[in-house]
Structure formats: structure tokens, C-alpha cells
Image (cartoon, rainbow, N blue to C red):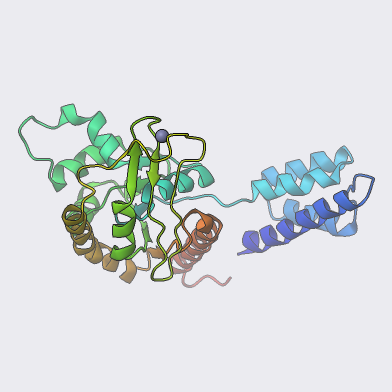
Length: 302
Ligand SMILES: [Zn+2]
């Protein structure tokens, strides 16, 4: 809570400083009482990295450095394992990468893990929930991660809870909340260019509050001439795939929702919603952190 408050004060202060330095011909050094008080607060509350940077900057007479550095040190860090769930065509692959880059945690894609460790699956056996769960458990990173492709069924959730060490378990789920109709339009619009190898989408979707532009070649002069679509991006296969997704994930989402561990995010504007996504995830995880701390120490006065 305190760190959160400090961070927003620092953010707005940094913006002010940047604006001032643009306006004046001299570099604005931020040597106001306000900045010094902020540094003292940082030192007082034991934000050690921030405090050291602030001290360094103060000693060297460059107060204006202290604030951005302190801000970085106070920045948000993911401390939990998060699963990203979303139907095909929702932009899950891209949002997974965005998540991983923003908070610098590894993105674990289940299909990749299974491919890399396929030798661990006895030939001829079906890759069922138990096999997937075991392979994943044995190859997850030791630090917080974002997981794409698990859990797909409620049975996988139970297997995780029963057979994974606690620190490896997923304890928060982000659902990309995109309705079937929108995903279907997007999946049927997918094209692959056989000349330049680019992936495109010829469907612009403007329904149910969603505004997702088509993705057409920019630098490629082939102009759609060599477009082809994947054999399984046809209507009946797409319908089946999406129906199966919603049927199987709804119980998982309910399960995490009743435990207060679910964030539903609708990327109405596609990639333009990335800043809103960042803010939503940070607020949600901060609230969860605060709630968990409260529950862990119900008798402690704040
Ligand atoms: Zn092309």
C-alpha cells in the first residue's frame, strides 16, 4: 500500500520534471524540498536499492537522477505463477509475450514443453492430463512464470494441486474474455503468405464492442496474391474447437473466480489495449497481495 502510494507520487513527479526540463533551457535538477523529502521517505522505509541510488544522486548533486532510479526500484514485480487462458483467436499468444516482456518473467508454452520432452512420453501412450501435468511439473522454472496452455481441464487443476509442490502451482489466472463470435471471425480471417512467410488477418472485426483491425501486409509487395489459410481454419472445425474451449474452461474459471484468483480481461481494442492490460493486471495482483497479507495476519493492526 505504502509502496504503491509512493510509486504514484514518484511517477507524477518524474513527469513534471521531464516537462520542466523540456520547457527551460537549463537542465532542471529537481533540487526542491519536495524531492529531498521524498528521498528521506525512501531511505526511512528501507527501500534499500532506491535509497542507495537516491544517496548517490544526492552526493553527486544530480537529484533529478534519484527519482527515476528510485521509481524503477519500486516498480511492480510479479511474485506469483500466473496462467493465461483464452480461446484461439483471442490474441492469447501475443498477450502472453507482452506479459512476459513487461514483467520479465518466463513465458512457458505447454505445447513447446511437450515437444521438447516428447521422449519422456512412452511411445503409443496418449498424452492425457496426468502425463501433461507430470511433464510440466518436472520442467517449470524455479522463478515466477506465466503459463500458456495449462490448465485446460478441471482435472488438470486437481492434478496440479495434488501432485505439484506448492511453490510451482498456479495461484492466479488471467482470462482473455473474447466471445466466440469474435474469435471465429478472426480465425476465419487468418492468412499465411507463401511468398514472404508473413502471418496476416484479412478480417476486421467490429462486433460486440470489439474493434479489431485487419492485419495486412505493410512492406510486402505480394499484396495478398500468395495468401493461403490453414486447413483447420474452416468453419466447422473452428466451431468445434471454440465450443470445446468454452465448455472445458468455464469450470476452471469458476473455480479460480470463487477463490478470488481470476482476472477477466476483454481486449476490446486488440493491441491498443495493452496499456489497459498492464494497469489491470498490476491493480489486480496488488489487491490480491494485500488481501493475502491481511488473511495471513488477521490480528495485526495495520
Ligand atoms: Zn507476402
